[in-house]
Image (cartoon, rainbow, N blue to C red; front, side, top):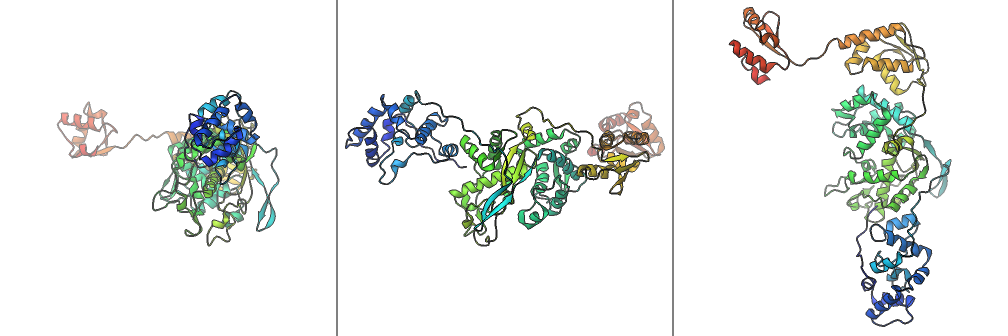
Length: 601
C-alpha cells in the first residue's frame, strides 16, 4: 500500500491556477466566465473573481456527486490533500480530478476546486462555510457466510466449499499441547533457523485440536503446514521457548506459562509478537524469490508493517464476519498504509529473468500476500480471528502471466490465497484490549479417566482426552496401554525433578477424574512431595585437603572457621557456599593458607 509523492499546498487559487498551462486554463475559464481572455494572467484573474465570490456555492452545486465528494474529502483531509488511495477505497472509484490535463481535454469544472490534489487555502476557507464534513467510512460486514465460493479455473466454473473455523478454544488447547511437547523435548528445529523440521510439523499437526487448516493430502500436495509451522515460531518469537541445538526448549517464561492463565498468555504473546524480529512472515510466501537479495535489502523491516496490521484489526467489530478484501479496502480508506518491498524488481516468481516483479501493480500483490500470511498463519493460529477459507487453487488470480517459465502447473501463489473471510473473536478482542476480560462459557471438569486406589489411571473417554492431557500423563505416569496408566513414586519424582509441582499433578487428576481421588493416591502424592522437597540445592562448594587429621580438627574446631566449613572424611574440609572469602581471611588469622584457592573463587 505505497504512498505517493508529495504535491504543493497552494495558499491561493491564483497560485494554483498558474500551475496550469494556457491550453488547460482556456476550457476551464469557459466553465465560470462569460468571456475567455487570451492572456494567461487575465484568465487566472477572471476565474478568481467568480470562484472567490458569492457564486462559489452555485458553481459547487454544478459538480457531480462524486466530484463533490472529492472536494469534501480534500478539504477535511488531515493531510491537507486528497489522498487518492483512501478516496478510491472509500468511494469504490478513482478520484475524478486531474482529467483536464489530458490531451485535447474539454476541461472539468472540479479541476478549478482541486489542483494537484489540493484545494487552495483561500478557496477552502470559503467552501468550508457551507460544505458538510464527509461521513465516516463504514465496514461492510457479511450477514451470513456462503456455503461455497464460485471460481473460474481454466475457463471452467468451480464451486469451492467454504471451510469455517472458530479458533479461540482450539488455540488455548493447542498452546498447552505445544508447550507440553516442548517440555518433553519433542519438537526438533533447525539449529540456525529455529524452524521446525518437517517431521516435527507432521507430528504436531496430528496433535492439534481439529488439525491443521487443510487435510493431510492437501498438505502433502503442495500447500504445506501452516499452524504446525507457526506454533514453534510463535513460541520462540515471544520468548516462551528457544532452540538448544536442534531441540526446542522452554525458557523460564515458558515453564511458568504451563501453570498460567492461557488466555492471558495468548494476549501477552500477541503483544510481544508486535515487535518480534524473530521472523518476517513474508518469508513464508516462498514462491516469491529474491527476498534476500545479495545487492541491497529487498524488503522493509517487518516492524514497520505489523503495527499497521494491528491497527487494521482494530477497525473490526468483534463477532462479525467480513471479507479479507473488505478489510483491505477499509484499511486503505483509513490510510493504514504499509510497504513490504523496498525494491520490488529484485523479487521474482519462477524465473528471475521472465518472472521478475515491478514497482507498479505488483506492489499490491506483494502486500496482499503479506496480509494473508499474517492473518492466516499467525493471527488465526493464536486464536485472535476466526477464519473461513477455501483451497488456494485458483482463489486469487493476480498476474499469473508474469510467473515465468516453470510455473505452468502452479495454481496458487501462496498457501494462504484461500483465506476469504475473517472474524475478530472474543479472545482477539481481549488480546487487542477492546475488552478487559476474556469471557468463556463456564466449563465443568472433564471426566476423561478414573483414578483407582491401586494408583492406576484408567481412561474412560478417549475422545475427550486432549493431546495435552496425554502428554501430561506421559510425563507423570508409566504407560501400560492407551487406556491404562500407573502413578509410581519414580515417575512422580522424575516429573518433579523436571519442574512439575506435585500440586499441579493433584489439580490435573482432580479436574479429569470421574471420581474423587482415592486416599491411597493422595497419600502417594503427599509422600512424593516430602521426598521432592526434603532436600534442597545449596550451591557449589570447594573441597580442601588437609595434610593430616590433626590439622583438620584444628581448623574445624576454630571459633570462626567452624561456622565457615565442615569436616568430611578423615582429612578434608568443605567450605560453605558463599563463605570462601571469609574462610581465607579466618584461616590466615589462624596462621595457614590454601594455595590457589583465591583464584578459584
